[in-house]
Amino acid sequence: MSRFKAVVFDWAGTMIDFGSFAPMGVFVKAFEEFGIAATIAQARGPMGKPKRDHIRDMMNDPGIAAQWIDKYGNAPSDADVDKVYEIFVPMNESVVADYADLVPGAADMIEILRAKGLKIGSTTGYTRSIMENVLPRAAEQGYIPDNLVCSDDLPEGRPGPLGMYKCFLDLVAYPPSAVIKVDDTEPGIAEGVAAGCVTVGLALSGNYAGKTPEELEALSEAEVDVLRQHATEKLKMAGADFVIDTVADLPALIEKLDAG
Image (cartoon, rainbow, N blue to C red):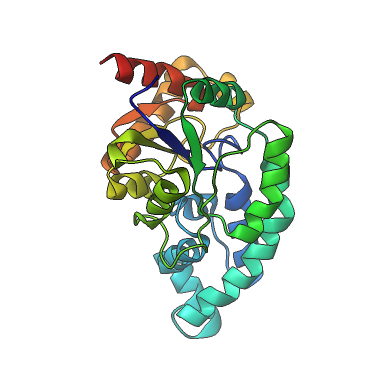
């Protein structure tokens, strides 16, 4: 038995969608609908936040804000955020299932954790309507978490702790120190920190590396390590207690923590 009672996982870049590609491309396309050219880097910047907040952050980017002012004659307003969000959500709903393959080793990892008696929770920056397209694909691959907290389920999302509080209730798992939060982004790690959980960041499967498994394999170990160190720095700054490459490495970390 483990000293932990539950592990709460993020979705894109953590359990599915290695490299976190589904939302990134849709953000760029959504802004294109309004005649605004957003870069991949600008789209990746706020990743992990609830999607409306993500769009707000992108609109606060000086380059995007300047384009908006030039085209529409005013700085992006909350009403403008809503307009882009209304375009984004159905776009993301239509493509997200195409990016819902489990991260290599994820299914085996879940079996190992369940064998230890751990409950499996999940939170996400996706809306409930987007996740409705993901859940069946995940289930086909053997991943059915014990709960799901979406960005629009609660009055406030990441980086606040409410999503994790809901997990404590759903999973009947407490104190917070007995719950591990696993995520590939700063807002997702901050969510776990705010709730008092042990936090584990993912360096290579998520947003900061932004590579497919095949792209990583084509790189030298030195090149991979540059990506690993960049992601680790970001995640540690957000408060991650530990950083591993992917969720496949989690059972070994938990064994180490239980032994220590």
